[in-house]
Image (tube, rainbow, N blue to C red):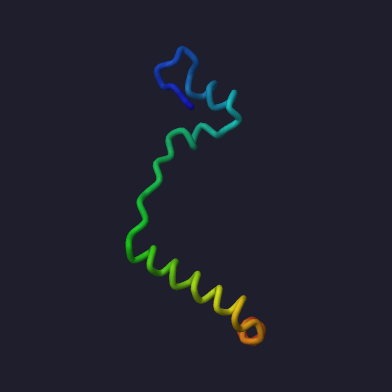
Length: 64
């Protein structure tokens, strides 16, 4: 998408593409296995509370 060797500057290329220049330089960091496991557990809990036990979800929300 962005060609750093192009005659147009990176700033101009980003402007033409409608993206921020910072996003050109952004390098995502890998997610740790511990974080992935935590996200899986939170997803499972969310599904449990929103699908299987909606009454418990309401109870927990009002208690907070």
